[in-house]
Image (cartoon, rainbow, N blue to C red):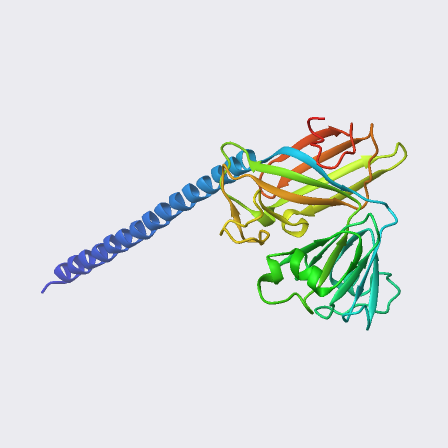
Length: 297
């Protein structure tokens, strides 16, 4: 074969290699372009969903019933044993969980022990709610003034007997009620399903010199469907992951420890959805009658 033939063959092979290389580069480039387009579309969909959620995912406050208006000096004393013996811990108006439950007077020494209480004394005219979980979760029992035995706690718990045979040695958090509202809420029209832990209420009031604010996630407050059941039909409060669907009406126990409004005062109520929208309400307190809907009185 002549040198010209060898040279031509080499050129042909080289051209073929270059051609194949170009095809491979084009294939890689097209894959990158397609993937980029898909990523952009996914990002666009996510952005669209987030934007839609931030506008549509909203909770409306339908009613605000006055559930309790207690004395600011109310106290409750929890005891270890029946007959009001053993260790004791005294709680003033407020919400107590975690370290606050264990050391309610904040003196650095624990007066209470989780899952170890049996009886409780509540001041006359006062009310408390005790809970199984350390974060106001699990069963709950609401009690008024008086000396309450284990039988009283069993009978007043939700569910009865704390869902078993007894509530003994199960208390891990407690609320001593001051001013309490029962909010009735529902997801706004156009909302998607909203997880319970994403819904937060806040109430603020002013005495003319300072502003006081109470705020809580509805699962910490205590919330359920209007009939007192959760979305599974069980007589119990919502848990964090429970989904509240559009059209669902539910109630929230909003205990106010900072605000104790009088007739003529105004309460500013915010209902916020994480990743969604916030609803604002101004409520004029015109009555302090228990059971009154402050939004329409």
